[in-house]
Amino acid sequence: MRTLVIAAVLTSLAAPAYAQFGGNPLNQARAPKPTETEEQKKANEQAYKSATGVVPTQKPNTDPWGSVRAADQPQDGKSKAAGAK
Image 1 (cartoon, rainbow, N blue to C red):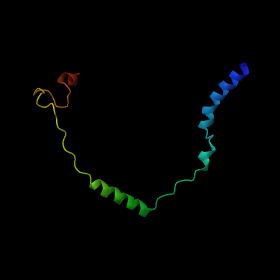
Image 2: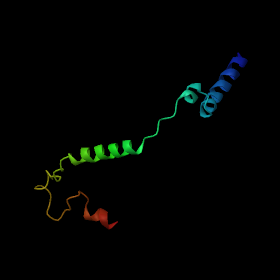
Image 3: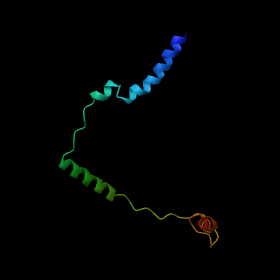
Image 4: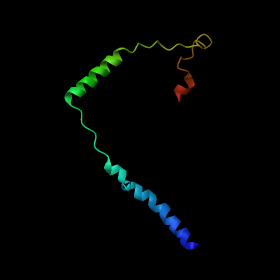
């Protein structure tokens, strides 16, 4: 029984170390990603710019509690006392 406990403890301590040093043989079998050519990079950049150009401008944030808030209180919700600290 003692031998079984010792073996379990050693196995549980060795497993993370084994994983840290690339113990998984599937990691070494992966092929490297192909590099992009200049034409592909330019095409990707052009597609990105055309996609971001279509995004509509956002409306400014509205303050639903603006009519309830006191006039001397700032709109960001922070009090003057908090800013003085």
